[in-house]
Image (cartoon, rainbow, N blue to C red; front, side, top):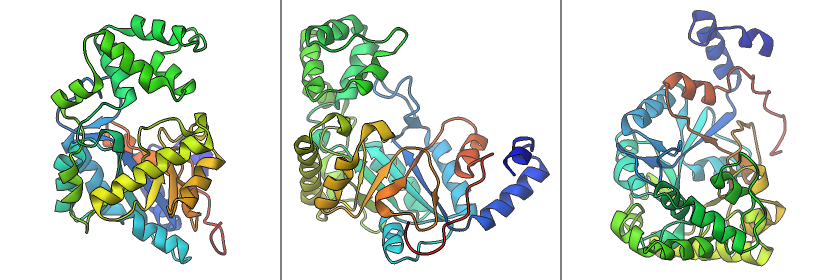
Length: 336
């Protein structure tokens, strides 16, 4: 079937028919879609990335999902998986990092459609007391300080940056626990601090945003305290990241986070110890960002998300419908 689909035009009537048949056949396939910022204008923290979606584009995505699938909360999905009765035609909306617009823009759009969502904030920056380390890097690069960053990394005995590799990709590939402090030192050399920049730009959620969020439609998950590459940390450091964030969410939201979303979320960014710590600290699910469809009674600690693309609605539809690949039949029996 894959060969046929590859030759079939997505929007032509054979493609539309095939998509309708596949949606019916893949009734137990679960999509979890990840967003970051829902904002009208870009800023220095999201410029040059795919992290920002225009509110109108976000609404088009939601309208498509409501027409063809059944939006459910992450907690409803996991509860169904645990009981061996996963919801059919399910789609889950998640929003990462804790940008202020996840409540002030996205939540209002979701509420009008009665669509639940899970927000995964980075707890160290709630209240705009600091910038996330990758946002410090984004600010430094946008303001012409890449050479300062490279010099600082070299002075701290980081490996050489690969030829043609961007410094953004390098910092993820060679992440170390001291990287946030190094970037803060570079910021200070330019006359600023993470705290000062965050206080001026106020890009993140405030404590009251979390405390007053509508519990019927908004859940808060664990996205760690500082958004590190977990696989680069010791198990003790991973536990500290996850527990600190868990306790902050409990304090602010009044209930524990249901799930852990691995920062960056590709296979190299977490390990078996990450999952073990998530289990041991009371979470009921863990989510990666590996762009996979979840088939049948997938285990709650093996859930995968798809980052929402920007651009045409057709690109979004292809992502959701796994086009042109054909999702395999759900496995028989219990949770796999």
